[in-house]
Image 1 (cartoon, helix red, strand yellow):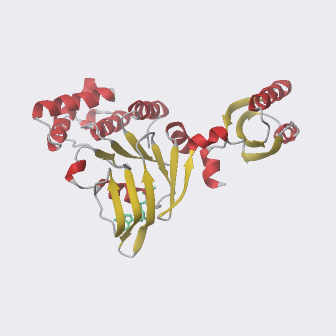
Image 2: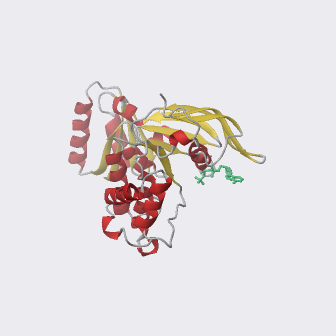
Image 3: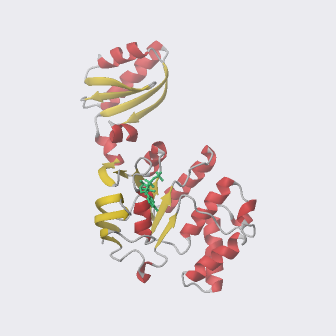
Length: 299
Ligand SMILES: Nc1ncnc2c1ncn2[C@@H]1O[C@H](COP(=O)(O)OP(=O)(O)OP(=O)(O)O)[C@@H](O)[C@H]1O
């Protein structure tokens, strides 16, 4: 059975059509990215999936059920972009309350609260109120709240927005670890982050679902993306273009170059690239097989 199924799903706010006939069918598994410009309809789609909003037309089901149905209690949860915890209650008190709202006994709810706090590394602050937490800890606490009851589907809206790189990595590692049991759908503007986490990317623009890109396909594409730290750009393009099997070299950004090749032996091409860098004393930042997600989506 599909995890999420939307058929010609539309949502209007008055005369504003925020979501326009979206049809998708998604299965459980690796994290799924939802990307799109501001106002594309990502939050609206999340709200429909959670049952916070009703469709104007079309249909949406999660595990075959309507989003707000009792059968989905505890199976779907979400971390809205502006989620805040109750400032008046300490973490474990409010998590216990959320657990009981999902039908757990008080004891089981407290155990569950402690379990999810431990998952996000916040056992030590379970008795503290949200205001005493740093921004990163607060975000982890909100994610912990979304994990109460071991849901099958968790929707994360900008889970690392505003976090420093170290805290963002903690959240990414957490999602990676948990994604063996939970399917995450992550809305974010951070394409680098999504590339690290997700296999599939849904692109929403002006309420319409555009392309669905599989990141894994990168592995078989005949592209290499090279980010350089220092080099002579004109010479780099000319010398790589001259390598046997290379069809084209395109400068994508200031220091990023996309190599399209038809060589059968990618390892041989990589060796030649390293030799070229070494001979010219050029330094590289990264060499990526395939195209970057940004390039796949926007070129
Ligand atoms: N409650 C509302 N009333 C009227 N219009 C709304 C409402 N909520 C959203 N919209 C409009 O619907 C469209 C989609 O908004 P939505 O918040 O779903 O986009 P988004 O992709 O999440 O944007 P962002 O990346 O900026 O968070 C926008 O044009 C927005 O202005």
